[in-house]
Image (cartoon, rainbow, N blue to C red):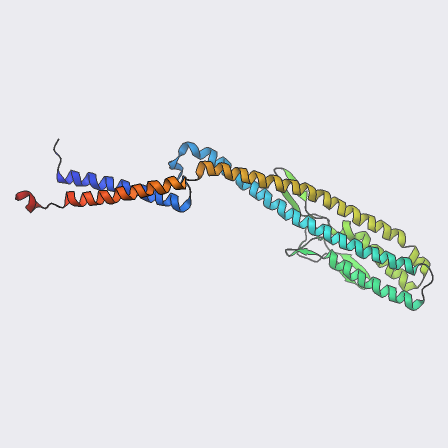
Length: 291
């Protein structure tokens, strides 16, 4: 078979281009750390990789949801714990005012402190987390508790912030303010009214309602704590699962960097040698053949 200079040149350029493409592929692997750049790189490996990627995305999303839930639950527990402390102080003051030993002036002093404590409770009821009112139900952009005089109105709703923390598992990340704090505000405002009357017996009559409100607060804290414990378990599980998925994907997707570097150097040397050989091969001119 006759080999012409043209066919020799064409073959040389074709092989040179193939070597250049392989170099580009190796450089891409080195830059990304991934063995698979396109589905066609390893068609048989693609289906399990896609399944693992979907599983990893789901685990990361559930993990983020669980983290957000944990943040909300933790903030709710702390706010209710603080509210419990404030309400206990209100009860102490009410107990002092109910024994009949305080003067009218003393009762007004107690009333002023209870009024200040009511402001603290309103502030706790309007706790925000990342710009969301925690006890507003689902109306998270509006402060749920509004004080007017000695009265406190709830303007939120009875919903809860829901988060999907597992496939088909939805948890309430908050408790509506009317359920958690409604009894507290009712009891404290009634104490203010009783103190205004100057009647120790009227103040004493409010002590059972204060105790009931404390029970409601403690139960709400317990409910949030139980949910928080469950979320902690789910967070740990999703974190571990995500690590496992990344490791499995690494086995199937990641390039052996030492191997890539070695092959890249070899291919670069081969490419340079091919260029040099091609230059010598294609250098002769027509004059050289006519000599």
